[in-house]
Structure formats: C-alpha cells, structure tokens
Length: 239
Image (cartoon, rainbow, N blue to C red; front, side, top):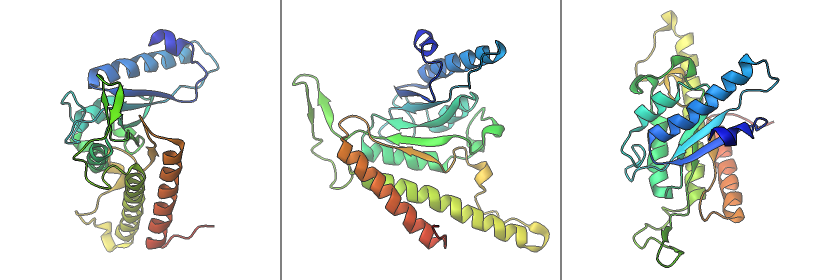
C-alpha cells in the first residue's frame, strides 16, 4: 500500500474497496493519513489526498461480512481526516439496499469513537454488483435463482437512495427553520437534526462487478428523476 500510494501523490481521490473487515480498512486509511501528514510537514506543495472506504456487506446489511457493525466501522474510520466516504461495493443490490438504509439511519452517538467534528462530513458510497454469483468451477457468473423480481435493479435502488437522502435533508432543514421561528426556540424531540447524523446526505453511487455502461447510464437517469421529484415535493424550483 505504501509503495502504491507513493506513486499516487497527485491523485485527486483514492478508493479503498471490497474490504471484508474493518482492520484492513484501518490499515489502508492509516497509511494514507500518515503520508498526507508527512507531506504537509515537509512543506511539499501537495494537497492532502482524500479517500473512500467501502466494504462487502453482510447479508443482513448491518455491517461487513466479518461481523463488525456499521456503528463500529463508521466511528473508527471517522478518526481519519482522509476518509470522506464510507459504504459498500461488490455486494448484491438487495443486500446493499439494507446496508445503505442502515448507514442513513446512523447517528453520531451510536458510533464508538466518532469524531464530532466530522459530523455529516462523510458521504455514503454504494456501488453494488449485478447480484449474480461467480462460479469458480465453471469460471462464469450465475444468476441467483431465488432473487425477487426487481430486487436486483440497481438503477431503481439508486434512485430511491438519492430520493431518501434529499428528502431527509430537505425535511430536516424545514423542521429546523420552524424550530428557530418558535418562541423560545424549543426543539421538538422527534426532529432529526442534520448535525447529529453520522454520515452526510451526499451520496456516491455506481455499479461494481458485471455493471455495464448502459447500467451506469440508467443509474444516472434514475438519480436525476428522483432528485427532481423530491425537489418538487419540497417546493424547490430549478433555475
């Protein structure tokens, strides 16, 4: 990792992906963080390189395949300034859907060791595979026979994730404006404040194994349509 990063001093963004467990991700983030700090101390004219860190999600979507849960993962990785995105890849869309929903629900207080100065600064990253499974004997990809119709549609899921993120952001902002305008500024305990969410409303979406250019195009289209729908529902107008 150190040798590779040494040759990527001018990279705009690095992506550490497909981790099965947190320990491996921490090693990669630690090395990048140290190199960034070393370059800063030496006075090199190089901007700190940020990174995404993504995992293979467990079937229940509650964490990665090693058994570590999202609160532990997010809390630990929030300690690295270089980490600006956390999420899933190389995971079936239906499982990624569970993982994304859990990541969206995380609050900073749930995550042990979470750095409060990183609140809502880290994006959710999700780029599932096609949902097929690789058969090592035949060296081919096989469809999962019991997959529900439509469940493996990455574009539809990406659109729903983006709609949920924009809706969460817009509703929270509207609620906070109402609180400020109330006499005494008393807060409704049922309102989720954006500053308490562990991960931001920003999302990085795409496809992993067996994704095609056509699939990426359909993801982009679904995200755009979903965004317009939420903007209209929240009363926003596009200029």
